[in-house]
Length: 220
Image (cartoon, rainbow, N blue to C red; front, side, top):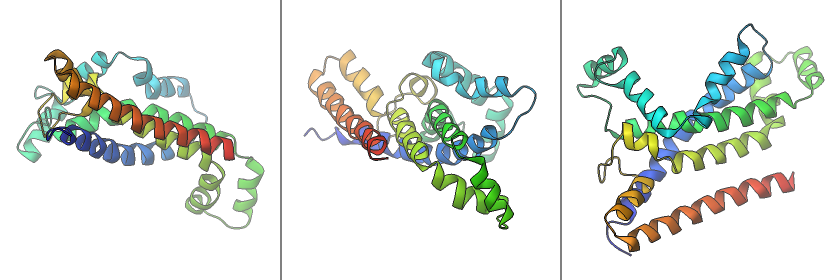
């Protein structure tokens, strides 16, 4: 195996892991809230949450640059705190992965929470369960299949993110070069051996995650 093979793979897994944790928490909380709350403009909010699923990666990358770039208020605030801009850093890749992976986790969690029998939750409230205990010990276990599926799919999406990452985080070897961007550069430079190795690795990881979702749905 070539010496520089593992660096993009390891970086991709690290970014996907960190972003998936944040996406998992956000997806659970917002999925639960949106599943059982009605308010004016809810459809617009949900459309906003799901937009990254249909937007071209270049558009997502452009918006991230506008929001977090050095000319934006957010970007300037981050630079004043951390003494460096967030663009072309490891955290920029994490943010890009969060944005594109969040819709999958959110939609799966929301679907799971919507499928829960309200009578079960009402009975738990009658027995004295507060909102936190109801969420942790009743809602999550009853929606666990959808939650796990969403977590796996969002991790897979974060792992394979390319367009927004390339625009917002760049392609710096050892720092922001993920497997997807490494494949692109390898093909562009004619290094088909490395490209095939990375492609095979990504196919293998993605296959294992998707078969896990299939087995989960089959057994339950």
